[in-house]
Image (cartoon, rainbow, N blue to C red):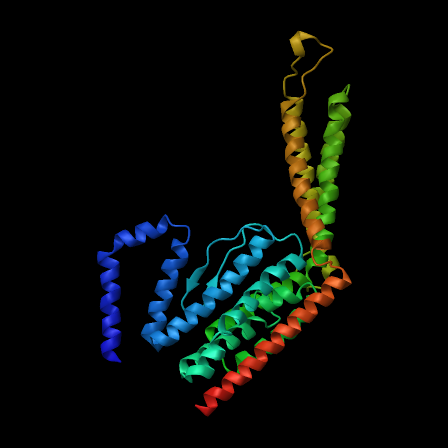
Length: 372
C-alpha cells in the first residue's frame, strides 16, 4: 500500500511539473475544467481507497451530473461544466434561473435518474462474473443517489419536492439531523446548514413580500412625483412640501431592540418602513434641488418647446428599472412554487418510484456485501 501511495505521489508531482502544457490545453477546452477536476478527484480517491473504488465513484458522480446537464439542455437552460471536488462530489452552476419550481424539479430529477441508470449494467455483469467490484458499483450508485433524494435543499430531493410543498424540507432536515447525530461527518453538517438556511429563507418569503410591496409603493410614488414637476409654474410650494415631508420622515424615531421573527414581524416592518421613508424622502428632495438648478434648454431656441430634463429622464429610467426588479422579485415569490395538481401528482409519483427503486437496490447491495 505504501509503495502504491508513493508511486501516486511521484506521478502527481511529475504531472504538475512536466505536463503544464496539458493544463494550459485543458483551459481552452469546453470540458477542460470537468476533465481536470475529474482527474484530480480520481487521483485523490485512488490514493485514499484504491483505483477500483475511485473509478467506480468518479464514474457514478460523472453520470449523475450529466443527467442534470441533459435535463437542463432539454429545458433550454444554460449550465456550467461539471466541477469535481474531492469528498464533496461534483456540481454544475445554473446560468439561467428556472422559471418555476416544476422546471427546477425536472433539472434536479435528471441527476438521480441518470445515476440509477449508471449502475444498472453492473447487475448482469455481477451475475455473470461474480466479481465483487460490480457489487461495489451497485451499492455506491444506490447509496449516492438515494442520499441525494433526501428532501432537503440544496440536495436534488429538496429541489424536486419543492414543487409539492417546501414544508417537506423540514422533514428532510429532521432526517438529516438524525443522520448527523448517528454518523456525524463534515459534509452532512454542511448540507444541514445550507438546508436550514434555505428552509428559513423560504419560511420568511411572506415577510419579504410585505417589504417589497411597500418598496413598490415608494418607487411608484417617485415616478408620480417627478412626472408633474415640468408642468409647475412655480416650484416654491413643491419645495416647501418636500422639505416638510423630509423633516417629518426623519423626525420619526426608529424602534430599537431585537424583533423576534414571526412573533414581532410588525415591529420589524415598522423599522424597515421608516428606513425606506427616510431614504426616499431624501432621494426626492435631493433630486428636486438638483432639478431646480438645472438650466432649461429649448428646441431651436423656441420657448414653447422645452427640452426634457436630462436629470429627470435619467432618474425616471433608473426608478423604472428598480421598480421592474422589485416587481420581478414579487412575481417570483408569489408564483414560483405554484403548479397544477396534475404536475404535483406526476412529481410525487416519479419521486417515490425512484426512491423506492434506489432503496431496493441499496438493500440488495447491502445483502451482497454481507454475503461477501
